[in-house]
Amino acid sequence: MTFREPTADDGSEMFRIVEESKVLDVNSSYSYLMWGKYFSKSSIVAELDHELIGFVTGFLQPNSPNTLFVWQVAVDPKHRGKKLATRLIETLLDEQKSNDVCYLEATVTPNNIPSSKLFKGIAKKLKTDCNISECFSEEQFPDSSHEPEMTYRIGPF
Image (cartoon, rainbow, N blue to C red; front, side):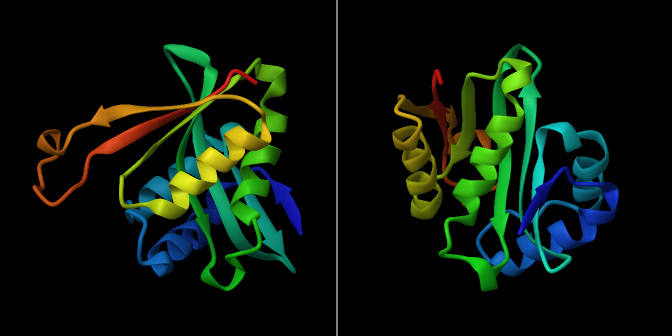
């Protein structure tokens, strides 16, 4: 298995993985092309036998450049349960050390237990705090069925 920066050519496979997840918010196919082209330095993909099997999209927060915000973590359904999401995030954080990143943030809905466990597990592995607070309330979303989004802030590390 190899880890590397994504390219725009990875966008269609990133889109496929999210679509097949049946649980993640599927963004436009254009957005995955954009992540591969413009946010490649703060994102990562995993390949096995030249097949994309997982990715993390992220960006350095403009108002807090020492914070990596993870937008989406996705693993191909055939490769789940192997700690790949954790390995992707750990590798990405290692690559961000030169940018003085010492915090990781992500938003998670209350019913997304796997993501909650993922981020709490990363904080435990890094021996640091994981503070959880509301980022967006249900009322802020235009569709009434959306749960609130909670910010998981991990660090300092």
